[in-house]
Length: 288
Image (cartoon, rainbow, N blue to C red; front, side, top):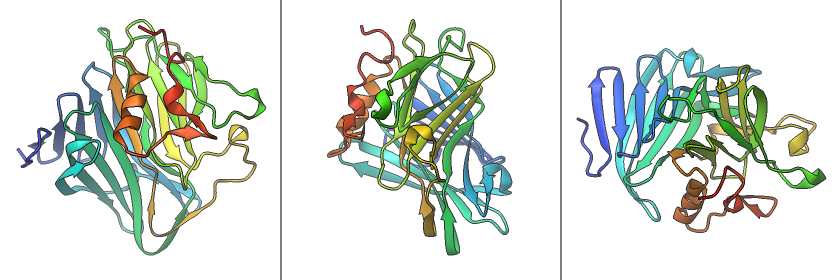
């Protein structure tokens, strides 16, 4: 077991597999192929996670890197969250910028905080950074996959746009935050951005068949008619370019994690155009 002074357990299962858990949510980090899995207490999961970025007109992901290593592990204490652990996974390859994945897990939190960064010796520029891409998503339940519903949150409130709940098959994009949930069992996953100063966040979900979510793309750099943009997202430049901070977690009552996340970050108010995301109660499924 890798050492930690917190209740978060970190284990080196073998030379290529690191597992992290706090009893509410678990991470499995595969250092052979660079993929990560996030598994919730109620069997919800997002597996085969990779991160990606657009650079020099092409998208590169962790799949394009040959070397994957656990670069850092440190115990941390953060106001509002308590004790936890920070892990940094470093991906390297010749001719590509270094790609870092940062994971934060706190002792009593049912979610993981995630951020990616690309690093180079010379100035880099990117206008799209995908922190979570996956083709294996489940919201849990006894069968392993309750019939999912998806909350689409609009970017703003212009043109009378509204919150909507949709079911697969679909190709839909939510902005800044979303919830994937089963109305009957109330199992679900909530994910979204915690920082909004630089990037516009899009969360795209795709499926060609009912009852399943076949593709997830959580990224900074969203542009569409609904973000009121007609040009690509602006470039973010520097020798180090960072994505937004994201939270991804599973709870049986999905919308409550939004309030939990807002409450635990002093001064943070998840909002778009002045409307607080924490006011979503009643949108995602029936109330108890």
